Each structure stands twice: as C-alpha cells, then as structure tokens.
Image (cartoon, rainbow, N blue to C red; front, side):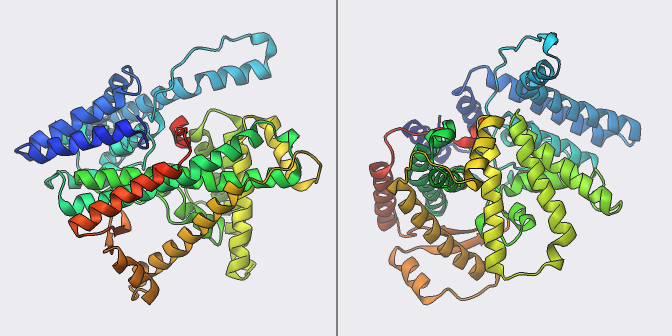
Length: 486
C-alpha cells in the first residue's frame, strides 16, 4: 500500500477516525499497533511474524542487559540481539549476492541461487531494533517497560518501510503524550504530507519516465542524453526519497508523534561531509554513531581515520543493496570524505564553486547507484566524458521538473536560514504565507515545517484543491518508492 495510493488515504482516514473516538490513550495505541501490523501485512502476510521476531529479541535482550551488571552477560545479550538482526538481514538480503559472487570467482562451484523473499523495510527495522539494544547497553537509554509502547515503536507504520530510521531514544519519550487527530495536527500533518506527495507524483514519477529508458540501454543514447538522464535521476531520487520522508513525517504528525528530519536540501552542500549531514540524515547519523565511532572514528591517527571512513561508507553502500554497484557507490563517497578531511580546508574556494563541484561529484556517484550492473555503469560514465553520437532526447518534462526543484530549494533555503538564525521572514515570504493562512513552525525532532491554512474552512479548501491538482497533473501510473527495494 503506497502512500500515494488512494487505498492508503482510506486506510489513514479510517485509522484517524478510530483514534478520534476511542476513549483512552491505551486503546488508541492498541489500535495503532494493530493497524501498523495490518499495514505491513498488506504487503505480504508473511512479513509481520519476522518483524515481531526481530523486535522481540531486541526487547528481551534490552531487558536482560538492564537487569544485570555482569559485563560478560550484558555483552552476550547484546551479541544475541545484534546477531539476530544481522542474521535475518544477511539471509534475506545478501544470500544470493554472496552465492553469486562465489560462482563468479569460482565458476566450478555451481552454487544454486535461492528463491529468497526480500521483506519490505527489513533494512530499516533491523537497524532500528539494533540501535535500541545498543543504546540500552551503553546506558544511554532505559529499556521500555511497557510492552504496548515497545510494540507501537517497533511496528509504527509511517516509517516502517523506508524510514526515517527512528531511534528509540527519539520515539519512546513521546509515548506518554495523548494521540489522535486534532485541528492543528491535521493541518500540520496534511501540509507536510502534501509536500511529499507533490515531490513524488509531480516530479519523481514524471522524471522516472525519463530515467528508466536511458539507464536501461545507455549505449543507444548520445552523451547529451546520458547527461540528461543523470541530471534527471539526481532530481528523481531526491524528490522520491525526501517525498516519502515528508509523507511519513506528515502521517505521524496527524497521529500525534514527531519523526526526525531526514533531508535538509542536500544539493546545496558545499562539500561532501556537509552533503552527508543533509542527505538521509537518520542513516548517516546511524552509521556514524553505531559503526564509524565504534571502529575508532578519528581517535587512532590519520591513516586509521581514512580506513574507518572508507569501511563505513562501503558498508553503508552495501546496506542499500546486494550489488557491487552499491559497494562502488559507497566507496566513492568514502574516498571523497577522506579527501575532504585531508585537503578540504587547505583548498579554499568560493561557496558557489564548491557547491557546484560537490553536486557534480554526487551526480556522477548516482550512476552506479542507479545503473542495473557494472557494465551499464561503465557505459554511462564513458558517455559522460567521451562524446559520442546516438539518440538525442531532451524531454520537456525534465525542464519544468528542474524549475520546480530550483524554486523549492530557493524557498526552502530561505526558510531554513530564517529558522536557524532566528531572522525575520522576508516581506515577500511573509506575504505568500499570509495569503494562504500558513505559519512557520519548528520543533526539536522534525525541524522546521509550514502549517498550511490554520483556519478550518479555508484550510480544507486549499488541501482539497492541492490534492486535486496533484492527481490531475501526475502520471497515470504511479511508480514504487525507490527506497522500497532497500
């Protein structure tokens, strides 16, 4: 059930109506947990037992860790929790990758490729439960004593399939608040959700019609068209994934919970380290806190720091998918982070130039991320740097999608600076917000967001009109979210 599917709107409306009439917060959380499991089962009825197994092992381990001061016993419970999550992730996601690699290196092995089902969202919920057990082990978080609260955290459907990766330290402290829809929550949540829906349907899905044929057969196209495909995918993956995050955050706000910010206009980054502070923020911070720092971080000399950066990013690439293309993508970013750490401050340049070079590097890195195999990656890269003839195709959709994206970044950067520096809104922005009755808000979890039309009648009209326009101009076929495959 995609967030952009009309069936989801029926599901969400039904859940919000139920939360509005249930008498107690406990009964509301019970309904939410059941609805989350049903949402996950809608993808495949075999998924929920695996999710509940991983969650149960994490909770049992956390409770046992907190119940003893024996260091060896605590480590054993932690290893059990992490080992279970990694074993589940490894079997379902990487079995055929390793079997195929062995067959490639040792052709006479003839190992069979298994028919393994990849459960939706497995990369996200295994990381979520692992971080919970690790935080309890480190003494940074007390274990959750309420089974209902823990199940609600583990199964919470808005972020279950493709993030943001929500840590227990962020979500569990919110479990005491009353949940259910209110005028303010609906106005805020709908505003954020519709922003994500716009990114997904009007930009990402439209650009997917450009990206797919070019990456499928890059040898057929001219260098100009290959560059157009790279630019289109750069915009598509941002609008697709940040759009999903917006919809997840908006849905959670309608229910009554805050999910963490996952994107901060990453294509405005002036260096690759800044890019990773803005792109998929919950994953990059997870990799930093639970992989890079435990490996030693920057505490053991320059050489070891570079190795840790490379290893962290290579594993981060492999987390995205069982393919050497993803390893190459992560390794390229690891090299860039090491280079930035070594020379970034020694080679000063104007911010505009630094931003352009960072964006160019990120765009080139998206090629192995999107290409179906190593061969297609090499053809695409060659086409970018060695001019050659072929089909020239520059769809008009690419132009207006990029215009929308540039306008969105200008507005977003303006609002971001206003919030971060506590500035007064520019007159033009104030006028624009006032025209639709919108207000700018900020919270410590989600960051800043715009509440659309706080007055009920006008707000309902604007939201209904916005939804109508989205579906009027959206492609007739909706594509799955890109990050669902991870």
